[in-house]
Image: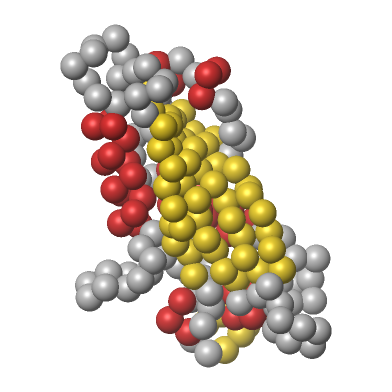
Length: 176
């Protein structure tokens, strides 16, 4: 059995460390149930898991599409635009999960679970949806991720039910 839990946990760990979130959880809470004092908040939902293996007897390819929900609240100060609170958070996320490696820019590896340089998939932000102006002092952003796990990544997660670590070009199986 293969579990993608390490990937989801790593995504949340990276994202939750990018801003001073008052509330963060992998259990999504509707923004209507949040108080201003609980913001800024980060929640992560699992999304879809899509098998993209081209045909049988080919190395596995899985696409994960988790979503993160970010809530901010400007309170009663009508001079504060909620977008000024959420934009720095979204900027930090975009910087941490770039789609293409620019000079001096590293692709996200989720702590080594993904190896984009050696054909081990990718992890980037596909798109960001925002709602502002219609929620009063609040703004909500939904960040859609695109994570591709290829045979290299898949091998890191499990081989025959055993934990595997990839070191350079070699796979080292760890038995417990």
